[in-house]
Amino acid sequence: MNGTISLVAKLKEEAKAARDFDDFPAAIAALSRAIEILTRELGGVVTLPESEREARRLEIERELADFYGMKGGLHRREAMGSSGSERDVHLEKAQQMYEHGVHFERGDSYNLTNTIVIPLIRNPERLAELQPKAAKARNIVERQIQGGRATQWWAWADLALLNLLAGDLSRALDAYAQFGRAGAQVRDCQSTINVLQDLQAVWPTGEMRQRLADAIKFLDRQQASVS
Image 1 (cartoon, rainbow, N blue to C red):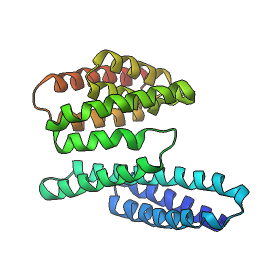
Image 2 (image 1 turned 90 degrees about the vertical axis):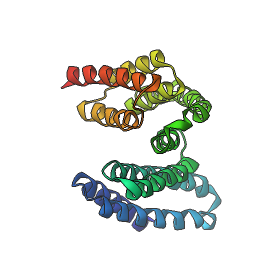
Image 3 (image 1 turned 45 degrees about the vertical axis):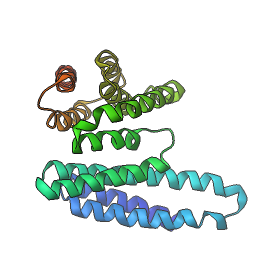
């Protein structure tokens, strides 16, 4: 088991290093290998002593949620740098990864949020259809924050984005203010802005585009204040 943990940790570091050099195929390959190993480990949990099973299952599921989320993020970045059918393929893969990830996600919201974001990037006309899901996800994240995630800037970023998608700019900006208070740095602000810009790019007009523009301006000021 210790050997497996070490190998998975090594693969995660390899994926991060490749990502930082924009070698997305190598990063995706490392994550795919880690997911394969963890999935096999999850299937073997039943062979452990009963006293160890639940803790090990939860540990593996947390890792799977993380790896699927990372892989989805890489496919999203590949999509944003592509066009035509290649873009569509990467967005489809990103959506699949986030949907796998949300199955294992416990006490987090990255995969959950992106199961709403990616379909909207693919087809913004689905906004009305997906707004009830965004509102439900927002309620989940609010409960998570009340339950102990209040110091996690990324929780506030998810809550803010879900409020935007649910149509509530005021609550979104309040959450982005908390995002800053929770310790978001310049890089965190930029990654959050990037997501909003990806969405803004598919909304040429309308109320949603204006809400996204207002949120980006707010985050630009916030980023300047911590730089």
